[in-house]
Length: 189
Image 1 (tube, rainbow, N blue to C red):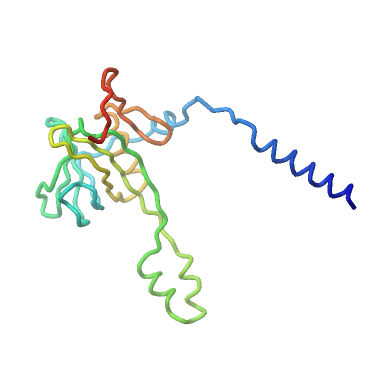
Image 2: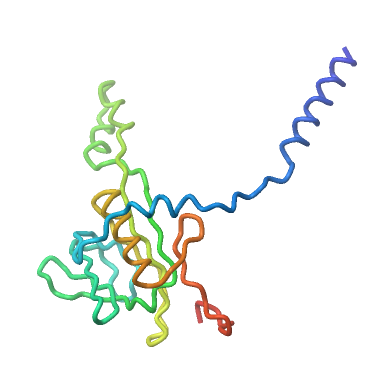
């Protein structure tokens, strides 16, 4: 019995040692092939602002507009009134985020004390967000904001168009703006 125990422990240690070996890093970027076939974004995209810009705390429906002559990204409300803008030069990183959320109707239905309500607790939908990190040198305001997009294709096209206009490069799934060579200041003063 002791021999079986010793063999079992030796096998467990061998498997653990194999699992702890260093992994090789794949330096080839598969992201470039994904973004090569993305359609350009329309100049105006229907979206929902989720918060993050200083002074604008509540979520609101509206549109996200590319203002190329003035080098800025504008959010307009339902009445087409400009609410706020983020200069292209202030955007430091951007990425597409997907979260699974339970719709409100499924939450209510799952609270009903019937056996038929059990499947409602498993209903989830995918919600897609454009998340931007920005640091405005003029106002010294920095933050992270997000915009809820309609679908995956719109999100990919807006992200790619914004990255091209801002001059960002990819780092994994995130687009970043590299800091100039001589700039050693922290990004959040």
